[in-house]
Image (cartoon, rainbow, N blue to C red):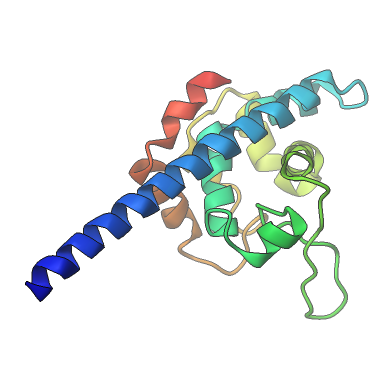
Length: 172
């Protein structure tokens, strides 16, 4: 009887977790789409930077947000509306995370940063040349966006596959 109860509790927990993840991805996708609309209307951004920002795959952005914010549950996501782990330039070894007014601002700044910052020139070039495979693009984040986590790309691709995030790419 106790084993059956544990199995039921585990099953319920897995379903609640999957429902929460599903809600996280649906809401975050909506926010990212709104951020991309703002980028599309931005008259100060160069045509090339807009092309990059608007063509960063949804599944890649959603997986980054899930990984960096622990599916929206991290303190940094809750307190700072920072779902991507974006940091400020810091002195010494103390990491300071950026604060945003709302999640949409976080994704607008993330898209602008990935599209305009010269450190991301490889991913920018790949997108301009038509690359849309998140795993290939994710490789170009290693050592620039992501420093010190050798499993980051594996974790991103796992999140994309497990949650079928490529379904969101068609909405853009």
